Length: 107
Image (cartoon, rainbow, N blue to C red; front, side, top):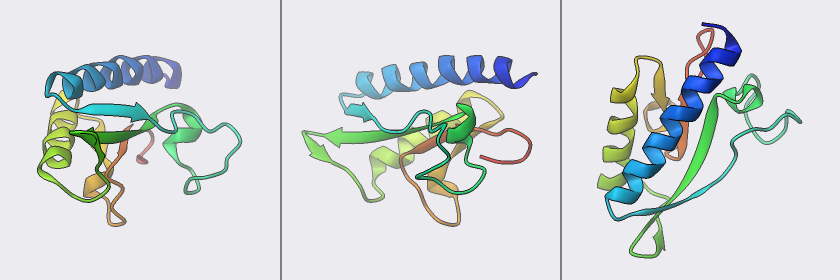
């Protein structure tokens, strides 16, 4: 798949994830989806190539920033959607709200 084709797959998958989160009765807002300026993320971040998104989770109106059963369920659901789906909750430096498609070995 080309980068552009992979970006299209990512867009569809992240949309499905956002709908699924809503169906669980939780709310989300969107964070960074694209950072073409090369700032705000690690070097070579997939945000710079439109293959990563940060989602902010709210449960009963409370912003959830720590590991929780909700994040674990969301991360597992995301990872099951496609073999290239990567969730930041599994990173060495945990980033619970980060969802990406792997590209050239990076997430």
